Image 1 (cartoon, rainbow, N blue to C red):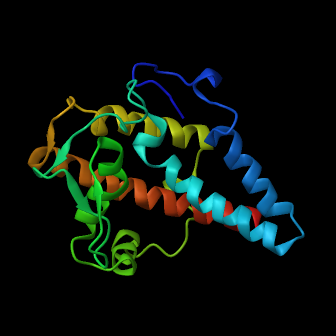
Image 2: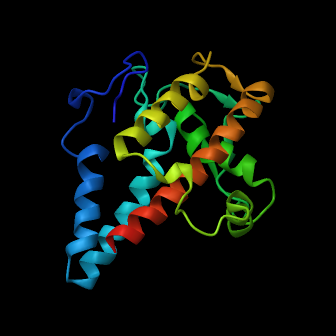
Length: 193
């Protein structure tokens, strides 16, 4: 979605026909109502994917650079960052990929994905009663959009290096967004599957 960073309120004009605002509810409905198990599984995979996207600030915030895809930065002085601990593969860095990959793998800090998820979850055993489980998809999107403004785009210009202070400021946001996405995904699956 192309919700401009300088627009305080959401407008349908920010969203094309295949935008998350339209697609996530469609996929939730398909997951809930489909009697075809293959269609139900496909819808669930889209719900999982879109819930992750909904909580990644560069998927819902834009400064005219396609959600950070055209904002070239370096990450700790490098033009590429690791895609995972288990892979030697690297991804080219722009602000969007820094939030998709680089920051997540920095947060992972040598842990497996399972261990990272356990650490993020802590003692939480249910989404029920958790403050992150309240609100609507639009509330969650506004929260993520604000994270894009306050943290992801904060002070960045084309060619800047994402390092030190920026990363220290961003990692707690990444951690919170991952936790919120998991809590809200659990709620959606529980209520619709």
